[in-house]
Length: 403
Image: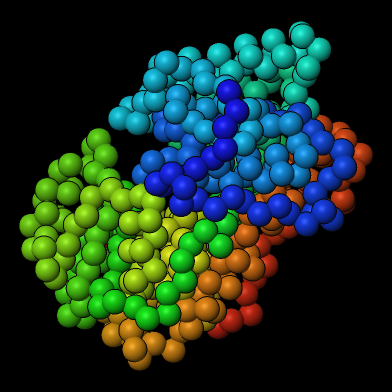
């Protein structure tokens, strides 16, 4: 099954531009990419990893690699797509039953390809924990991208199983939280195709919060900050299993359809216009967010990000350049007051800050080098992958007021 990727309404997705010849390679690899089993690639709505894989697979194919994408039913890509399960499982994300079944079937397909004389050079795993735990049971080098954060439980897991694959972090802040015994091979950022996102320089009279309705994502804090600033707030994102009580108790009572609006899960051009028209994206997180695709999506639309200095926000947001880093809701309210017509943050500069650091060409080049190193193909430069460069722009004090 081969088909071109398309996110959002048919006919509105521009094709991924071909990458410069020097960035590509004359020696193509056979690459197996293992997506999570829960949501199709590309996602219809929520699905950060799936959005990343859409771009990455298209870029690798454009560079001349033979790419097979193992993914959930309904997936589309310029890569060869192999569907392993009978149906996607968006409502049971993390189910051991489905994940173990999915990985076992992938291992069968990979071994069958080798037995038929068409072995893969490398397997790139994005599927979760099972594939890494079983990486020493498949006859192909494994590259594993860590999409989650390191906590007590995941740290123990990676201490036990991390040696079985080349581990890739998606930000320096995530890599820094890895246990000492866990070797991170490289840092490669999640990508965006900036030219697929609309740039707006004239903004509407609202600020935006977008994400899962999980307490750590801080929708309730966004409501408080917007109220303090007297600014209209638009909330968008799914209420997933286990998040219903939080939504009903802390979010729903504040939704009045005027000052605070909730749009549910959004996708495609609706999502893009929400970003592009907002005066700012609010990111009042209280956890070490490993990346935060919503931030680079907002920046691509010329919308500054106002964030708490947690996790990847301290890398993605360059204080007073493409947004503001603040320590609590009161500071966030004051930052909101600085947006709109009085804003000193240039939308074009926001967009450039995303393109310069997170363009798909940067991600594809980084992974290409890691693949070659893992597969022992002697074309890899000495450095495996580009690290995100520390910014020289001023950052505010990093004290965090826990509330």
